[in-house]
Image (cartoon, rainbow, N blue to C red; front, side):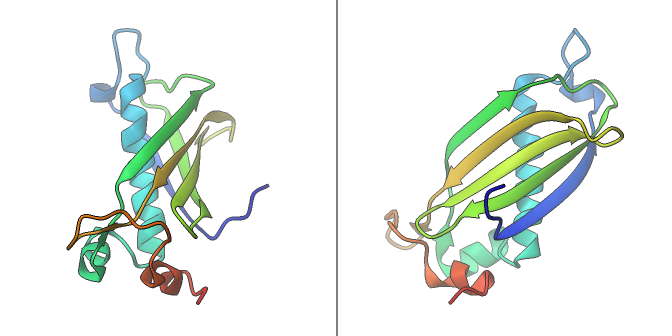
Length: 138
């Protein structure tokens, strides 16, 4: 299993407004579930959106990859786990969505984010020290 520097986990019950006519979650809603887990991960290291802005950096998502293995059904309780896999030059976060009751893996995904200096609008080629401090790696 790849190294994990930080993680976050949430539980979601797939709501009615997320399903399509077949009673399964529309594929576009998965990004929302990943965002909720990523927010939990960032909260766990005290570096969510408010702290990012205060530090002078934004972290836009530049890549999203999702592998849909099994559908998410209406009212199904799912566990979404986000694990920080890389941080030196970018944030790479791996995700796993599983059925809360059985533990069966339903989906895997990853996102990539890069640091952007808010003042200049320039993308950085290495993660700023503030992130490493949050991860206690300096």
